[in-house]
Image (cartoon, rainbow over all chains, first blue to last red; front, top):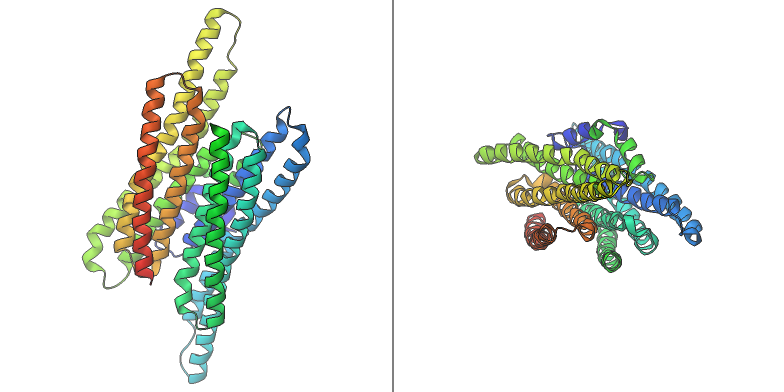
Length: 208
Length: 208
């Protein structure tokens, strides 16, 4: 499991010529940091006096953010596994017509699997951005910048995951899969931009 | 040193009520991932046939990206140290007029130190974004999305660091320091937005 690695070792592998971890793992880790910061804001808010009426909502935010962080953390390994699966498919034998066809089909499955991980990341980021809005509106003012950092991390994770979808789809022959993925990406980009913009406006209004 | 921690433990502490690591550490780690991905793109490009004319430039990119990653990695601990220093200052005695004045002065130094770390992060992000431009233009097409992810990570790191400056400055009484910090932030935000926009346009043009 990649998340038992030290941060320094993860960064070292990210920087190396080995393809995993790569942009997909980085996107998932940015998402996990966004979720982690939302939980922290709620934890700090619960710990402050005078926020008592918000306790149930803050407890809900902690629960949702912790679950989301676990999802993102799992994606760091899932992204590497999907990519490694695709690389293995390319190494399958091409010594008969049947083997060539079989290899091509497994490569296609591999590209789709490697595209499903960033699509899951995009969906988790949208949920994270909705949660960040509640965090920025209701979290303690002392940690308001952390709600804002969560927005930047989640938006960067989402936009990174979109690039990871876009680099894979040209290789995918199932046009219905490609169309569905690209439509989802377009809708997600629009929703995320609007959501992040509104939350950052809340952060700036409460900061000033 | 925080970067010897496992990713899972770092995320757990980020999500906890303890103030460090917080948004500042997350920003620095996003910057480190951006730098790491730029090095990876150059490493992969060097490893491919037919890119021979780019070897010296790719070797330069690897050297610059590795140095930048080390800078960002150091900031993860520096941010926590600056914040902990500020918290210690608040705990200083207030049992005489001299003690109160001394405490107030040390708190002011603490706020400035806690603002210097995100300012350093902003400067490193601008250098990272300039490097990402070269990465997107000259890196191998197979890892083009990784240059794009580097841009998103560096831009998110920069905007997060800006929030960390903005939440500190209202407490700082040295108006010359505040004005200089806010002017630097405004200029950096503009430069970063333009730089990231141009590089992402290069990525999209080469992807299509």
